[in-house]
Amino acid sequence: MKYCANLVLDKVILSTLSTDLCMRHGAALATGELVLALHRCNYVLSNDLDAAVQALKYFVPAYLRPADDKVIRDITSMYLEELSDSNVAVRRGSALALGVLSSHFLAKAWKDVLYSFLVPVLLRKTLKIRMLRHELMLSKD
Image (cartoon, rainbow, N blue to C red; front, side, top):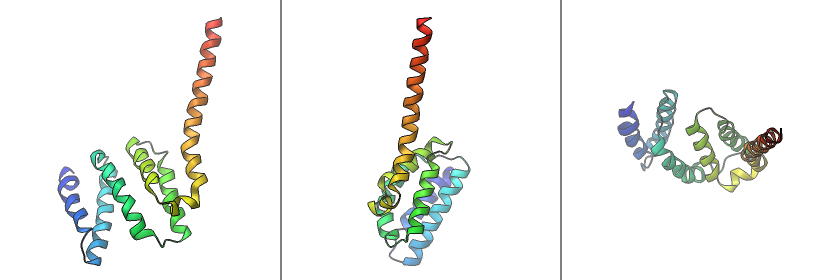
């Protein structure tokens, strides 16, 4: 797995910059498949997560700009669903990916994005308030 994560993935990612359209397309597909396979084997690319998010910032406008509403909804929905994944790295990566999506993408689903980020925060604050109230009640007894 280390071999694929370190050597193979680096070479395939470099091929995404090729001047040959077929090479770039194949390299992009291979990169996705490698990352997915590594993820399924629970191999965490934590050091490369930030680099992947930065790459997404340039990939989306270059390749997905003319995307129709369905494609935009599907991509945004995928990242929103992954915010509730049990794997912390997946949640972090999805949150970072949503943060670099262009306004073109976010404008279509801004309510869902805000909701997905705000609800967990509000639930934690509500839980914390309830716990404090409970402790206060116990201390009065």
